[in-house]
Picture 1 (cartoon, one colour):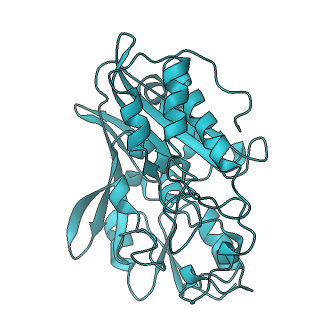
Picture 2 (cartoon, rainbow, N blue to C red):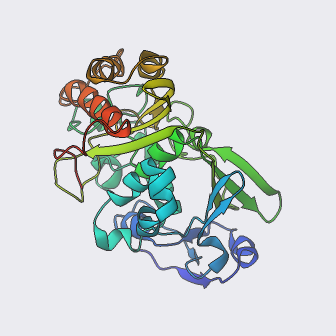
Length: 333
């Protein structure tokens, strides 16, 4: 790990004033320190925002929720209002990593973690996402990689919170000392690698996430998230699904289906959503939505199993959200 200085900040203004000359924000530091130890990132200064109290907390507003980016995954998962009205977010944060990590890792850090592709994570390999001209994953070990929308890079979106927040139409507030504040939707937050493989988000070097905003769900909304992985509780997802259903009795007025580990950025499945809209939610319609969710998928040499796994993840999460089945015992966490 390289030598670096540390700027400890207790206010947002102080933190923003330090974001210059290649400085990098540190909150929980779980993913950042991993990248530094692996030689992927070598910042000369860390801006520690862990003690910025105004970036913590969960606040209910007339329009929904405002969550501070330093709020831990455990705090979000355990919050009574989120459990009652935003179950998809409680599920996603409550089944990420291990209990120890959930008590330290922040929701902002979860949104901004980098891809877990071992070729990106290893200093021994060139990688297109590190500014090189090679991607070993296409012809190498790719069993955990994308099956959709991966022309440039087949690594998959690692954030469970992003799956939930996309389902809830969430957004982030970004603040800069020079340009003030702007709001960016979760879908627009991430840069598709085809557009720029070395840039993961639209956040500029002098910007900081200062809030996560979630609109109030429509009446009759139900939601759920489930993650499937090789290890029982602490692995990253090999397939995950987030479902939001706006129900009128047994009829689904509107559905949002989000898939996390299928592509380089979190994605909605309009085909699966259309398969549920105006329909009664039952085993038949849920299975049909799961099946069309992978239409057009093109697996790599070692991950064709995802063509079977994602439809199961989607249809079982639809039924979970609709209250027609318990949480899948095969799901991780």
